Length: 134
Image 1 (cartoon, rainbow, N blue to C red):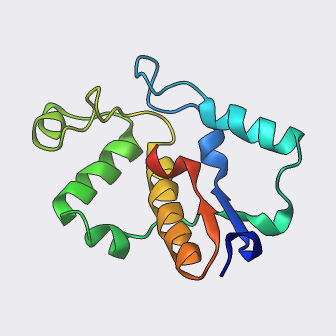
Image 2 (cartoon, rainbow, N blue to C red; image 1 turned 180 degrees about the horizontal axis):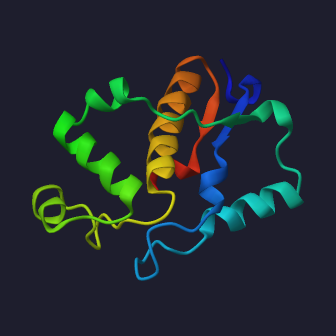
């Protein structure tokens, strides 16, 4: 199908409007929120082009991660703090993988949106999921 005839699919989730990563992380800038504000102000997308990012479920995550890691991640995200063991064994609560409010939802929306974007692309859409790597 020619690119001009393909439908656009923009995937996002409200959690991406929130700053993430903690105060001292280099990616803590609210770039995603600023981008969404510009897109909305310029009316670049209509409602049919917007797709909500579904939250990835445990079965999907288990295809890529060990159960003990997922258990630790969910516990740390829920409690808001990583233990010394979590930092040592899973690198959770470090500069590379900080703990912050909204961590669980942001991670699940990022993964779920990436899978949805791939499905839409396979169906012929031009899918864009800017929160897929955050």
